[in-house]
Amino acid sequence: MTDQALSQPARNQRRFLWPLMATLLVISWSSGFVGIRYASEQASVTLVLFWRTLLAGLILLPFALAIGPRMRLRGIGEQMLFGVMSVFLYLGGFALAIEQRVPTGLVALISDLVPLAIAALSQPVLGERLSPRQWLGTAVAVVGVLVVSVDSLSFGTAPVWAYGVTIGSMLIFALASVLFRWRRAEHMPVHQSLCIHTLTGAVLFGPCAMIQGDIAPPLTVNFAVGMVWLVVFATFAAYSIYYTSLRMFPVAKVSAAIYLSPPVTMLWAWALFSEPLTLAMFIGLAVTLAGVWITSRG
Image 1 (cartoon, rainbow, N blue to C red):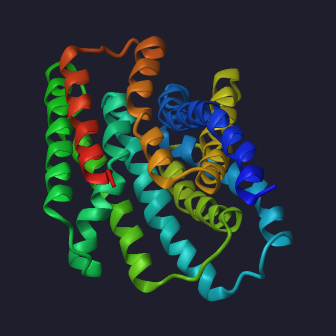
Image 2 (cartoon, rainbow, N blue to C red):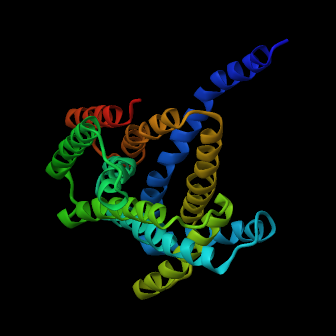
Image 3 (tube, rainbow, N blue to C red):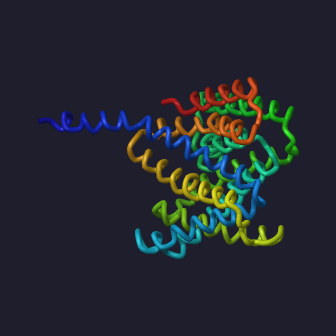
């Protein structure tokens, strides 16, 4: 029996497993935006993020210390800096935008444009040239986001600066990713790096929450449900399913599933928070997805 014949059942199993993995990935990925929107009705966004990052970091800490290579100071320092940019500024930025009532689906759409921003920043920082097709796809995707944004401004109550915060936080995360690739940061297993990122975020979100008031969590069922949602689904489940999918399936296929999270987020926000859905939103979303496809195909 040949190796090809032996590997055929495994390929078939993965093919049938992919729809389930993709569904779980889209639901868990979009749950982060919805969870922030839900929890921010119970407390300030800084208090929500403080307890989310603190709980996630403390749960991961014993695994980070016991499993994997010994963490060195240089690697810890690099991951702390990345945590400032990827958790405190990126996560904090889009959470602040959601608190200011920027439509949750639009925040998800802008946040998921990080790969396009990384591609655009790779040329000036890393010297990696983009093809005309990639530039065209990026431009088309930006046009789609503008369509959704203009439509959101027509009925939204959020201040204009909150939309800018969403875009800025996305660009900061993209820049951080490119800079760490340029610096060739020390490799670290996901559970260790995520532990450092979340604890770094907790250290920074804590004083911000104290400035706004009491750091103690609200003793309500809704806040507890929000925390479980954010820690279990939006943090542990989302990252676990994402990296498991990357090991089992092509990167392009996994990335395509991620880009399905904005429409799912829009539907969740409509069903749970009565956020409006308009034809222009779906047109802009379709244009954005077309731009992503043009950029990433092949």
